[in-house]
Length: 273
Picture 1 (tube, rainbow, N blue to C red):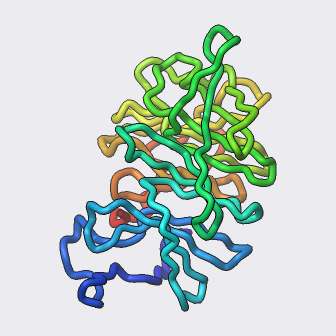
Picture 2 (picture 1 turned 135 degrees about the vertical axis):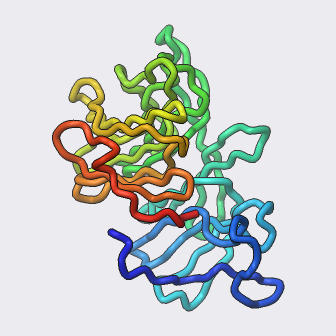
């Protein structure tokens, strides 16, 4: 986890020439998102081919890398697995800039759209919302998300939760985005129920922990950065460290009492894509 002993499993590959990639370093074909199904000993990823501008497609291989399967599903970002139920989730941003969550079988078959909603301020009606990021807690049968382009202070800007099929949605009171900030990446630590998420205005980045039923969110870290919105937020299994990506940099933060500052945040690598 400290990125020592790094091993390249699948090098960037130019299918037209049958050789490892030697083209532009800023448009390298290869994985853009990755998910592990440890119970199945399988790796799933979204990958771009020789032409960078083609949409990423879904691939699968075993831990032994003996065979790589192109599953055919096209998606833009995000990749989450519920291997116990034989399902995977992706977000598609291709249609007129809107974000849509899809679910499919692990072989890429039976594609279905997951409609996400939130309760309006009147408490009587609901409206659809677009996911900015998603986190799964398969053991509890729950899906968590933050909304894209939600106005600060609105009910839509809260943390949301639903069943894995998008039903029985609910929003958490007290998790509205402060003025000038917008929610982005999130993750959930299933055993403790703690939800971690970020609020950012592109310069100031704040990391929060929210435990349903435990009061208001706790600020656990804050940094000032010009690298923009954090992505791919992940909490480790022991609930002691957060990992995330900003631009091409992978960072990590230890979770402890008090608020972590920039001086306590560790840069793991500056070469991730």
